[in-house]
Amino acid sequence: MTKQELVRQIFLKESFLCVGLDPDLEKIPAHLREQDDPIFAFNKQIIDATLPYAVAYKPNTAFYEALGAKGWEALEKTIRYIPKECFIIADAKRGDIGNTSKAYAKTFFETLPCDAITVAPYMGKDSVVPFLEFENKWAIVLALTSNEGASDFQSKTDEFGIPLYKKVISTVKEWGSQNNLMFVAGATRTQQLREIRELIPKHFLLVPGVGTQGGELSEVIEAAATPECGLLVNASRSIIYASSGGDFAAAAKKEALKIKTQMGFYFQRPKT
Amino acid sequence: MTKQELVRQIFLKESFLCVGLDPDLEKIPAHLREQDDPIFAFNKQIIDATLPYAVAYKPNTAFYEALGAKGWEALEKTIRYIPKECFIIADAKRGDIGNTSKAYAKTFFETLPCDAITVAPYMGKDSVVPFLEFENKWAIVLALTSNEGASDFQSKTDEFGIPLYKKVISTVKEWGSQNNLMFVAGATRTQQLREIRELIPKHFLLVPGVGTQGGELSEVIEAAATPECGLLVNASRSIIYASSGGDFAAAAKKEALKIKTQMGFYFQRPKT
Image 1 (cartoon, chains in turn red, orange):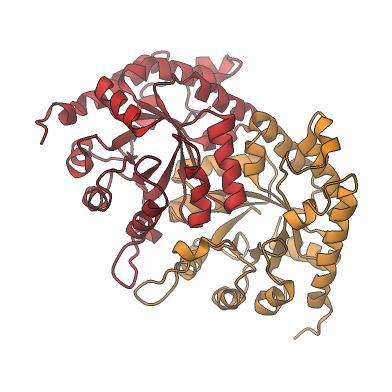
Image 2: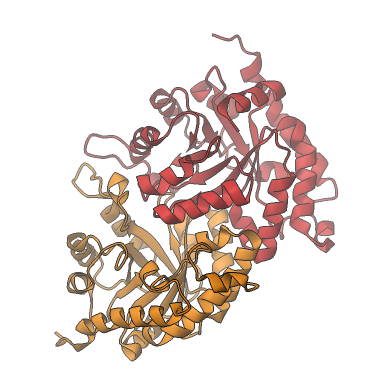
């Protein structure tokens, strides 16, 4: 998907919500576990329910791989089920030497019809560039994540006082453009979001950490929204596990609508 | 596998060779492509041929995922085919927020019988620790990789002149022990290998970059071998693609023997 089309979808739905599809057999409603493919059955209903309010879906590959080949089949079916107007992110956090990253890129961009894959930057340029060589496909590079461990390395400063996550952004942005590169920046760190936006005024940010992890949506918008929106805000557990009963899809829909409504703050405010 | 058992296997075989199983459908011998599961057929012969000279096998998940669910099946069959006395490394370079890393750990340690998984450190403590909570299982954390991109972030120094890869080692080693943690350190960087060994005198290192990537085995031994060996040296393409003809397994065996013979330098030198 092109940036232009993504922006169009966001303004059409008045939403920049990304729904994280992280299904866990132990957490999905009991009645689904009797089905032939419980994970796909769960995802299908979550997607159907949240589609009016979400512009993107983000399956995290870990939850599928945990089930072996059967899980990988559920992942494939899920990705193929998501309507084409949605932006599909394989949350895989891959990154390896060149020929290996190329294999990963083929997996998610050719074998599967994903629009984007999340990429870990630690191994440097030749581990990231293979993901940037596919037309209208995206690499979403980890910069500042929403978890506690982000302070272990990402926030550590170099001899000039620059934290690693900023070094990652300013280095990686030279390898691609605002049309094939996004960055992960956690919602739990508003001040840093503001500084990241100064570094990259036009790139999209994938923002996890709203909901279960505790970030505030209005603060994220104030800190980092652009005239083209420039944000994909992800919520996973708060939506997909909103209820563990037979009403899980309705509860997910309600939760997605709640977030979508909060996003109105962006769409309805006076444009500058 | 325990450290003690790994060391026993190394001295039994007089080898610390790890064979990287990175099969690419375009590179494996043409006659195998007609088989029902060409990747497994290829791996099976490579394993049978190299078994006398290798103590570890390291399938890189990228090459299996590239083939979808069928590739994942080939990965499972391959891992289950490797004899129990070998150390099995899932080269997956995973690392995510806590509950997600836990899902990955279950995949490779419970669904599959791997001994170790490679882990990217960028997301910090809660992304690594879930891999350390399984008895006799290992996390092999990326420190200094063998590729060109290693200089982009891993070698960058902080305000005290300490490069990131050393910061990673000295931080991560506190999260586990020499009995469940190894580090990746590329063979292409001998001086740094020496410095890494000073930081962690007893931990095992997984050393890629010998062979196709150009590192010299004798230099690696001089720089980083310990009384318990302390090294797993990986070769992938130079072994598995030693020939693209019907003799590929014999050629792989010959290449593995060549490396194993060079390793004699460690086993036959006077012990200090």
